[in-house]
Structures are given as structure tokens and as C-alpha cells.
Image (tube, rainbow, N blue to C red; front, side, top):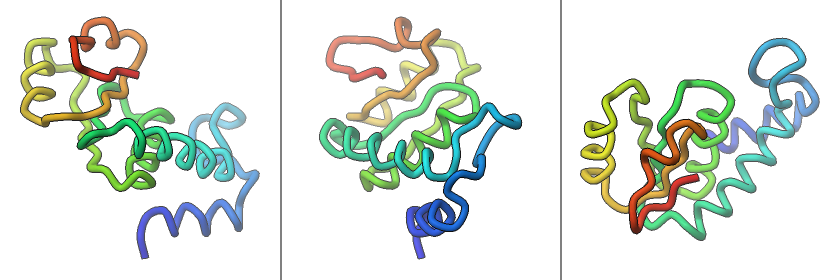
Length: 117
């Protein structure tokens, strides 16, 4: 059984129940499954190798994780607290990827040839 099967089973059984976050502020299991499918379709089209995530653990992290699984591309979470030059080095070492980041990091992570969302 893979992670998407577990997400699908949970969304089918508990669809409108909140999956993440503080009470009343996070997505439902059904929304999380929909986000995984939408994000996964995008990553399947755009990801040439991996999905890199730069940001804190939270709703965006979980959505990116499931979307990467949906697209069947490796998920590479990086510590957003690293110095920007260290992040650039790790991103270069990872190779071709779509980079998902918090808005505050996008400008610093953008370089020619990189897809940063």
C-alpha cells in the first residue's frame, strides 16, 4: 500500500474532516487529496527530476509531499534556516527540480533555468 492509497482511503472515509492545522484553519482530507492531484499533475508536467521544498513544516509541506508522490518524483525537503549560499549549493547538487518555497524565499532562490513556485 502506498501513501496515495492511504490518503485516498482517508479522504473517502473522513472527507470533510479537517486534516491539518489549528481547528477551522486547515484543509479537509478531501481538499488535501484534491491539492495532491492538482499539484501532482503540475509536477508531472513540469518536474524534470525532483521536487525541492524550502520552507517550514506545515500545510504547504504536506501538500507538496503528497503532490510529489502523486507525480512519482522524489521529494527533497531542505532546511529553510540554512544560509542562502548553502541552499543554492544543495539545490545545484540535487539537479533538475521544481522548487516549492514560501513567498519570502522565492526571490532569493530564483536563478536562470530554475522553476520556483
